[in-house]
Image 1 (cartoon, rainbow, N blue to C red):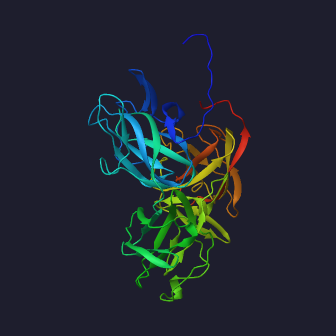
Image 2 (image 1 turned 90 degrees about the vertical axis):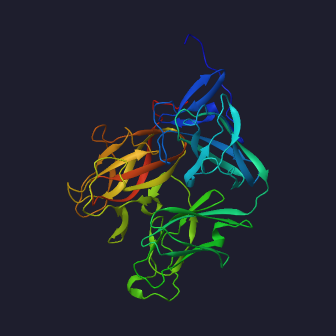
Image 3 (image 1 turned 30 degrees about the horizontal axis):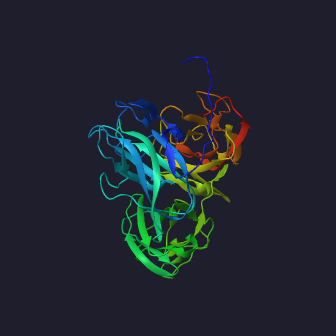
Length: 423
């Protein structure tokens, strides 16, 4: 508030994150009370009872030794309506842990627990970089710092299969080195199926097998498998391994398995580690709602088929991909797409889950025959539009606007250092 200057301290990635080391989004703000600085969503911005808020703070930690860790926060929770966050590590679990914090008149150390006051969360982590993400749950809950606490050597491997079925009767089995270790009856909604193995396993030791029970209406969809915090996708263009129990009329070899693609016969999925980059091909997107994969000649794509137009970002039909931005700067988005007419030539586009005010209405170029390259624009902004992104991982989400608009791939194009700097 006067003439002067800032001075700096190098940021060292370690096992803890103080308030100033978090990258914040939305209504997650910094404040100070009684000498303690903290981050929080101020009272009055509203509470969220499920994961998905745009109000979050994220920080990277460095785990020196693989092991079992608990998460300890320095928190202040003044009342029963200001005493919880959602927490994820490396994007898992999908629904987050509901951390019901200890209530107090000041800052106290409290371990992240599950299910709003349940047992302290323990997670197997490999050595290396990991990301802790804190989401708003109840506004007014304050966080000064958070740290990982090593509580023991690795107990084995934590495995999470994100899956859904179409009928609710699908049987999904987790195989490790050829042995079935757990079988689940799969829900018709996306669910995390968790298994803790007694010894450490590699993703390539794992298969997720499926038995339709001879019912051709049953299908299994896999979004990802996470082993000790590392996500992997299904192999693109993997051979379909069948048990011979199904007939060929709805079970063919050489299907493309990827993300939310389905397995429509007895068989199993195999895996490829998920490596974010500046390019997202069709098989690297996580699809929701009516967004589905298709093929036009030899070109794979995703779209919402005819009969479903949506008026804004945040609708149920979306496709999301993780990007790895190597250098902070300004980027444009190039899409390889097909839009055959003015009635099916638009998407909504958002970054990092922000659907509140930063969505682009992308009126795409049209070609009745070919897939063409087109730079994303915003009808209410610029053509082409650009976004400033810091170095690191980000998400881009394509939302259904006009049905029948087909997208094969996206690429982020660096166009300059930009005028904005996140501090």
